[in-house]
Length: 206
Image (tube, rainbow, N blue to C red; front, side, top):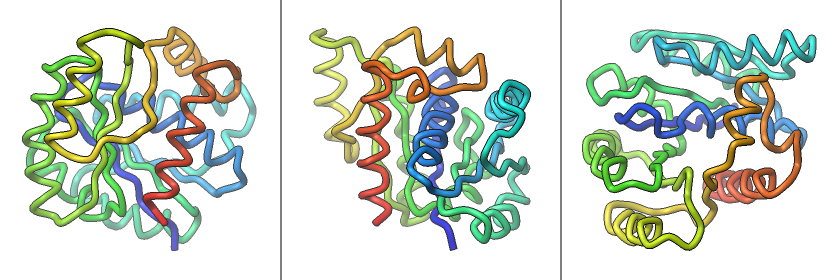
């Protein structure tokens, strides 16, 4: 049975889909079977998947969608097909998020390098705590050497565990996402950041 990684944050634009897609491709590059589950009505991960399939002919991973009540069923099905199931969730914190959290072996909480994003984690971590799940904050769109980035990282450490790996503010993430691709397929600094994050996530999954 595969492991479930849930990407959750109540603030929109935090980078949930970017992290989900990039981890999926990186895991796939390492020979793991990957499945995606999009529970966000906006369907950004689904659009990325379709763009990838159109570009490559075959996306190389399983994909499904579900509303809140169907998350458990879809996860059970996908865990039989994949080593890792990555769940992208809506940008909100309410009862609809809890079914996804219940299925998670690990919850990734993206935080862009702003205090506003960090404040938005309060409700997420409250639900994660109620469900007794393990979670890690991943700093996203980090500007190297800025005071704000350092302050956010320090404050995040007081809220919950923070991944050592982070993703910088790089155009390549937006460009590749729109093409159905991922940073690791372009190489460069961004690819290294994703690889380090994948290492850490796989370590946390055991």
